[in-house]
Image (cartoon, rainbow, N blue to C red; front, side):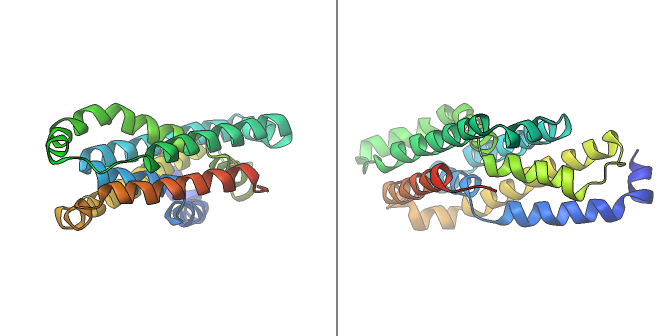
Length: 217
């Protein structure tokens, strides 16, 4: 299968890989979530969040491959439901973030010891759900698989495309996590972590409002 990919479909693969990287690199909900985890909770939660985002790509790919993307696009109430669910989830995270308070020294030491182990499952869930409930991602993959990928491309090759995009997404955000969670970077923001949380909370709520009210073609 890989031999067939490199022999017959490498041009198509490069086209969709380029489109995907450009889409992933643009700031959005995924970027905001990974940035928040990296600066406030450290490397492990950020990496787990990134893995959740990467695995969520398989959901979008599956939706596109089985034709559910077309159903979502052609069914206004279903698409609206996804928009509302995604916006509410981002808004929920944002509201939690803007309520962040400056911890006392004792509480800060306690959080330093316990936050990481508590957040790993939540970190994965936030990354996964944020990506899955993003209707722009759903439509992006639907457009990719119906517009850039030929109808004659075998399902197996398309599955390889999807696997690559999930892997590339995970690698991109894991790399971002490693960069933002460096000791020097975190130290720079350490004294004002709760303020960063509030700012990112406002940003997430703003994204939620844009997602809720913007017309997505």
